[in-house]
Image 1 (cartoon, rainbow, N blue to C red):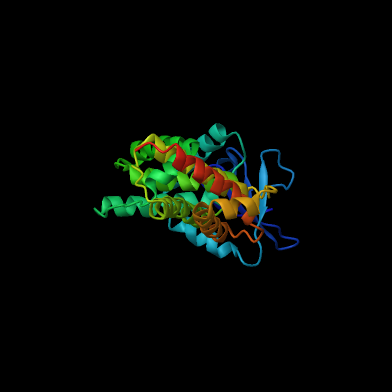
Image 2: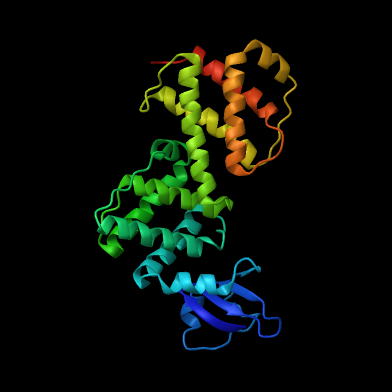
Length: 280
């Protein structure tokens, strides 16, 4: 494999000289080991994972992204990704090696130029992805220490979406849309059922947990069978209407094209129980 570009200590852009196919190779210390070399063997024991670029992902795109990155950003991103893998206990999607440093570089640019970072889905992200938010907090500290800049909590929320995206392969943009869907569902519940849910209350935490569980069933394609769906729709029409609209929004966010009405029925039941036990 011909080495085209080294991305930090752990990633190398390569081309197969026989097939001309382009690959991204991953391995701890692989980038460092390839410095000063022109080729790397396909069976090199240091290669932990390889990702073949398709025709829609030209090597030039990745090379241009790397060329624009601050070396310090690449270094801290490498360390963050290694920390993510350790704490998540799973492999990460290869694209995080490019998406994360590009996000960090843009965030640092905004912060250094006095531009505010506002995250309208911060609370939903904290409640919906608690592990990812905890990991993002560690990442924020690593960025602060390396780049000598204060990282606000709103930015930590955006980092948490990158952590989640790396683990589940769902694009960050779709995760942001999902967080928006959670927020919109809470507002639908308030309007439709005539209540106001304080964003720092136990009731809010319970409601978000119900909604997140329903949305995750779509993300994981569980397709639960609900034999009581018709009964629930007739007995709790307000709750069912809210649940059905919310599930459609979540399906759009996730690119899900399957049936949503069974899960909408379960969410409607959860919303009804929530209202019955609602604590102001």
